[in-house]
Image (cartoon, rainbow, N blue to C red; front, side, top):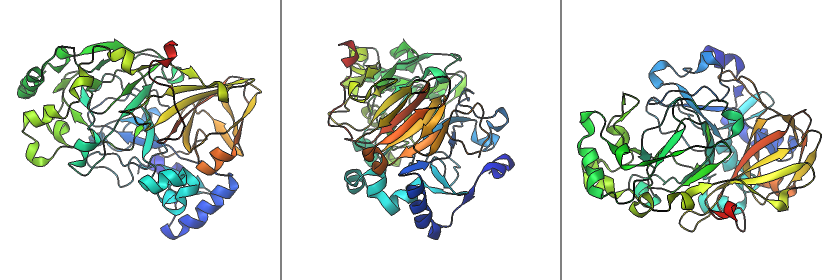
Length: 421
């Protein structure tokens, strides 16, 4: 940890103290748990510098680890980075000057924190969300399906995108995302790109189509679908896994090592090009109606909207028939308040304004030092969500928060394309 982080961070609680601290935090917050910022670097990307981290702290993990371009929310998922810190990617609860892992809290009181159904089925909080914020595009890559990830003892990763206007004052270098493959592309063409890996640009983007990114909209990205996210700061609800395979050999003049293509594939398949191409969901990649089947716009949830506040779906739809995660955006007018009652736990991040949630303050920071604790992030436990939480805007601008949910939280969610109705 850097000297800056040491000045700001609370003390990590001893393992034996977690149970009593958690009980105190649950009672004090009526089921609301204050989380501290969780920062994650990526060695192969350049930070976009819009996620409020202080300029001197972009390389707080060390220059050899790369810049910090991600902040993870409500995470019990470890970041799959080389040379990672032991707790990298994991969220901490803070209470009375001490902090302890959300992961450990769930092991102590799983039913109260995430609900008995999710805890009994998964034994953990199986989802998380994050901001990823880059100066330029990410290499064209995919995330494995659950079946393919299981070959190396991991889980697959579907995900969704939302581009919050509050974090996108500038476009940065390339506000377009390549998604999927041009209809009519053959597996042999993709295989040939892999054969040309060491020739510089392997040409994979020649086979894809780019879509302009729009603030306040999003996308649903199933496993096995190639995508090269552009340079808007992105809120990304997803399954709790960090598997991926990079199919692009050169991005913005930077080499992408072969190891980042095959890192989550069986070792004896690292040179098997047919196997590697076979991990792509071919039909979804060459879908002639890719936009209609994957593009999202916010949908007002009238059942949770009232005088002075509006709740909108921002990530929704099913992945191969399953409700694996979802996300919403709540906006409360100055001076207004509401009682938020959801059927399941959620991770909350405040993106605009100030106010309170229950007894906990909400404040959007202008700048955050690495290791500093903030008042913008809360885990709304199952206990609090089902009992109802009062949220009040005490500021002079709209109070806006994003929250994401775990699998099967709602009896139903909107389908992709419902915003057109």
